Structure formats: C-alpha cells, structure tokens
Length: 316
Ligand code: NDP
Image 1: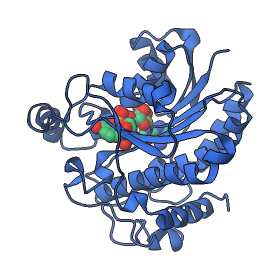
Image 2: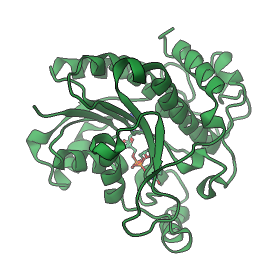
Image 3: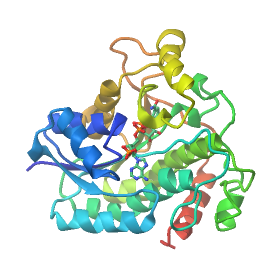
Image 4: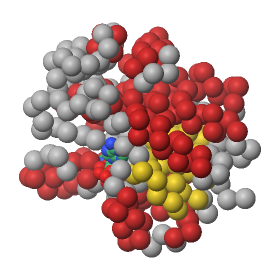
C-alpha cells in the first residue's frame, strides 16, 4: 500500500523538491498549493510521474481555505501518513502590515496560524492511519535562533509574553509581542512558533499516538523564491555570499532530499527534535539533533502560544 504525504507550498523551492524526492521514494504526494497552474508546471518540469501526485488548492493565510483543503483531502479517500508544513512568506521590505481574511497579520497568519490549524485538524486524520511510521514535519530555520551563527543578524525574534496574541492579534496589533510592526521579525517570530508548535505537538500527542513530530533546518537555500520580495541586488549577492563566504549554501534539490529523509528514513524516527546539517556545509555532512533557541525550548511559552493560537484559529 502506497503511503501518502501532504506537503504545503510544494509549487517551488524546498517544498517542490521534497515532493519530487518523496515521489521518487515511492510516496503518493498531495501538493497543497495556492497556485494550481504553477504547481502543475513545476511538477512536470521535474519530470514527476502524473500518477505520483495530486495538487489540491490551499491558501495558508486563510483559515476558511485551510478548512476547505482538509475537506478536499478527505474526499480523496486516502489515509494521511505524513504531513510536511513547508509553505511560508517572507516580506522584508513592506512598511505596513498586510492582513489575512480573518484579520490577522499575514506573515504570522500564513506561516504559523494556518499550519497550527492544519496540524491540529489533520492530527485526527493521521490518528486514523494504520501506517506504522507516521510523521509530522514543520520547517524551521536557523534564523529562529540568535545563539547560532546564521541567526545573529538583527532583528531578533522575540515573542515577548505573547501580549499581541493575548489582545486578539487584530488591527492595530501587528506583532505577537504587541510591539511595532517589523516584517523581518514577524517572519522570525513565525518560525519560532513553528518550532514551539512541533515541540508542543510532541509533548501532547507523541506518547498517545506514536506519531513522530520533528522540525529541521535544511541549510541556506539561497536561490529560492522566499527572497523574491527582497531587493534585486540582495537576491543576486545572497547566494554568492552563502556559497563562498559563509559556506551555508545548499541547493534546492539537496534541501528537498533532506526533507524527504526526515519524513521517510528510519534514522529520523525520533520525536520532538530539530534536525540540522549545520551552518557550514561540507560534502556528505551528516545530520544531527540541534538544540533549539532558548525561546523555542521554553515549555511554558510553548503552552501559552498553543492556547492563544487555538483561540485565534477558533479551536478553543
Ligand atoms: P519558496 O518561496 O520557494 O516556497 C514557499 C512555498 O510556499 C511556495 O510554494 C509558495 O507558493 C508557498 N506559499 C506561500 N504562501 C502561501 C499561502 N498563503 N498558501 C499556500 N502556499 C503558500 O521558499 P522556500 O522553499 O525557501 O521555503 C520553504 C520553507 O523552507 C519555509 O518554511 C522556509 O521558512 C523554510 N526555510 C527556507 C530556507 C531558505 O534558505 N530558503 C532556510 C530555512 C528554512 P507560490 O509558489 O504560490 O508562491
């Protein structure tokens, strides 16, 4: 019986390459994407066999759309054996916040709240699967962690005491800590929430369900569209800088292979951990369990983040 994985944001970059790699490993891939034509073209351009994948619409920034996606997935009649939360936006240059249909700041709504809701609802689907090695994987990033080389560039992520979430996270509130809007920090904050969500899923559900919950830093994939909203000069220089100065550069293809390993390979069946291949890439470098930032390993913060996020997405 062919195992089924859902990957969000599989129309480009890391998610697309993860779809390709998992299909090559024999998985059936449900590509959850907001631009169906782009996703189809992307899958074809990598030579993915048409019977190895299905593209379904989702807009992670809209809770109504995530809900519809779950209904669409269920109507396929497949079991859910793995889920990869990969989609993300990064809007470093905007001066004013953008808003989701439900009225939340769009970066946190897309990267965190949409996935938080998806994980909670699809946990039920995964519980019903009889696949022996079910996994839920959420993409993290080194920039969540100011203690690591790649995470030192300001602004630092800081959820504060989640004052912004506590106050309902709607206009005029734009940041989780309730402070002034800062789009780069919003991205980093959302990725801290991704890691906290993974750890809290593990704490709440690993023992009772046997599901493996993990996160990973695939390396600096400096060529992806994640940087499309940055200055053109940055887009040109960043990959060169990462390749020749920091040594952090990873190809999109390798990043996808890494995600696929964390989803499917027996060595990665360890719940509650965050995998990394380090900041500097060396040939055939082995992965290891990386310590997450002090903020992302704060259990009290994780619980508070969980409770407030559940309220914001209408699950509590
Ligand atoms: P890309 O921009 O190439 O891919 C992001 C994907 O998310 C695209 O498929 C995009 O769709 C999709 N997406 C964005 N917004 C939405 C939405 N509202 N609804 C549905 N899909 C959406 O970036 P990367 O591949 O680089 O990033 C993927 C993940 O990897 C992210 O979680 C990122 O934080 C993480 N990561 C990336 C690193 C890097 O160096 N690039 C390093 C560490 C982590 P569309 O094609 O329609 O735009």
